[in-house]
Amino acid sequence: MKARKRLYEVGEVEVDGVKLPVLILKKSETVEVNVKKKDSADALSTALMKDLIELEEKGVEGVYVEYVATSGKLEIRVGGGRGLKGELSKWPTKLKRVAVMRESPKEVDLNSLKWHEVSGEVYVYEGKPKGQFKALLLDTEDGAYLILSDEALEEEVKEWEFEDEGAEEGEED
Image (cartoon, rainbow, N blue to C red; front, side, top):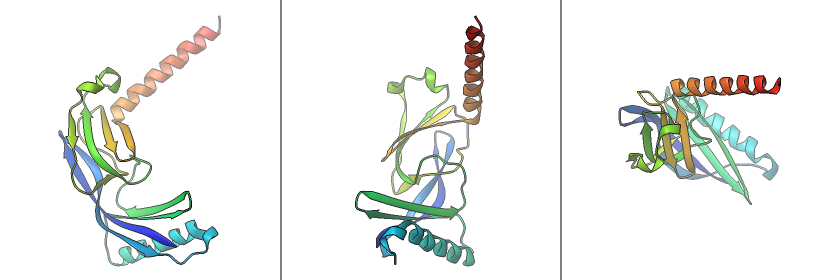
């Protein structure tokens, strides 16, 4: 089975004072993975683990390796690395532009956002943004992702708890 193997280096992009963890594509190649059709996910996982062990033995850190194979209409993705934690998107996806929000996304006019274009082979997947922001809007080749700061997330949770308490009080009547 043929698979696309991508090697990324962990990096960061600074946008409007916010440091966003990213993956920078360093190498992309088509490789042959020895596999029986029904075991394709296991074979890709085995190939990935071999790569990660080899990188670890070489002392390489701050990398992410991804295998993507297609079988009919099914796409199989496996990936892993040494570096970041905390998911920003469902898999590595090319980052096109970023908008930084300093106030709650509920209060922002989306038409007035200041977008910052990202050039090069920069992908977003995992990590924790650092800096002063309420939310980030990431425009990627696979759609948009809204990332809330810890502070904004806490405010949302408090608001939900307050709404739940109000609903419970109303149910007692």
